[in-house]
Figure 1 (cartoon, rainbow, N blue to C red):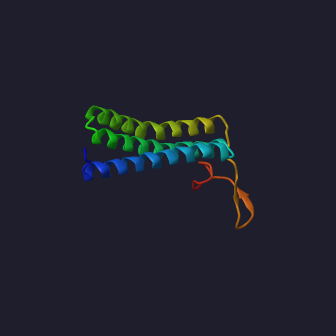
Figure 2: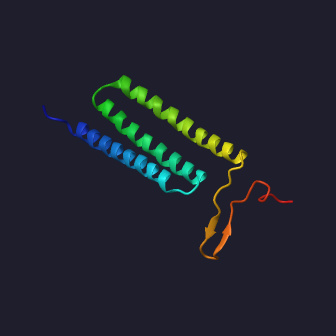
Figure 3: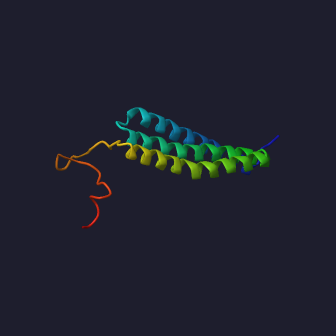
Length: 128
């Protein structure tokens, strides 16, 4: 049975998305191990993992469409929409909860002036 050019292109694109999504998830996992405090770990976990899930699911959707499994493709699309809405909201809720419980971000070192600064709080950035 010979494959058409479109089937081959869908297969190559889907595997590219799956491998790219897997790389994003792996980078996010390594970021969890390497980052120093809660907020940078939260950032390292949320952004690459969201992109990783999008890549993985996009590749799986293309595989489902290529195999004429339309119901699977619809379900995977609903999962993508759910992750797009819930992941940023959950990350924001975790960050606000940590701030309200007194967790402070790690000070940022400015290498050009060798001084240590912190991110401005909500009252520091406002005009009198």
